[in-house]
Image 1 (spheres, one colour):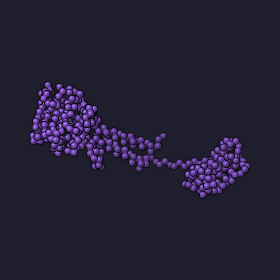
Image 2 (cartoon, helix red, strand yellow):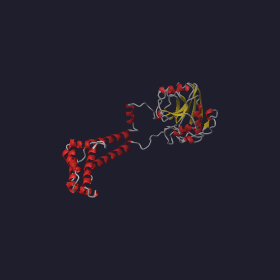
Image 3 (cartoon, rainbow, N blue to C red):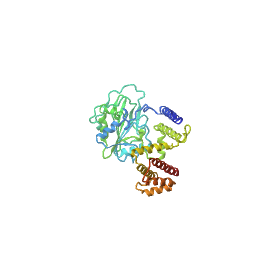
Image 4 (spheres, rainbow, N blue to C red):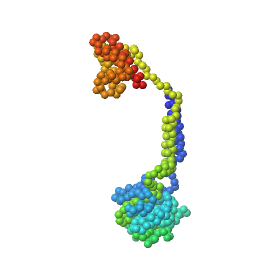
Length: 394
């Protein structure tokens, strides 16, 4: 039958498990929610962009993920930057850093996101009231980017089209609409200083699903090859919500309390609470201490008889063996080296308060003629020595 302590422990663990399951089911989403796509290179879903990252890597392009805020320092070794449908806006400092970086001769690839994330750079037009289909796509064959590309697929979820460069922000030396259909402009080229900005109304051509449609994969490779000079092809992950920051106690606390890890922290606190309860709270009545049972004289007599029969009737051998076993026990009890002389062992027993019984046993072992009754006496003397030594240690 289970002890009260064990039953209470099982009930406590069961209650904590039910509470943890409720918290997880109540506060943790089962899958990524939201009505928009997130083309992150970390995602393998249809709207992710991990395939684009791996394709460029397989082609030998120096590809990387940009996980810090866009600044001059973070763009130092980047030749071409993909900013695909970011979920947060670019602030003014980031927009200024991007334009300065492009002006130095680099390539920026933008894809419109769920909000007006490029308002400082590009003007867009919403398709909320558009009822017609995509219609026939028209590609500008004079655009060098489209060399070898026959068709492109923008997917079924185009929410906005492109109007042109934002007034006053981009110093344009030329604007061309290289991809259009009945909905409007889907691809826009803006020459800014010595660099180029390619803007797309959707990130679909670069997603895991869209990369295999039409010639979208060729478009990705052409964009990666457009930039001149050394440097890497980078994908912006900072504005996808996967920023990388320096480790600090404050940053770790904010991360632990973020929605992504909130349920895990609840489970952790529940487990720590259960461990504390088990460590400091007593369940049930205390269990009495069981005293070790002392061996009775009959047990020693029976053991002595067994030894006597094993020794084929030699009392001297049995008594000497008893004395040797007592000395071995003393070495183990007092942690003496195995090579300790018998005299030093006997002195240890005498100092422990068992001199009388030890000397009697030694005198008995030194006798030349012993009777079977002396074997029982030797067993009792050995037991007496151990008892005295054990009580002295306690």
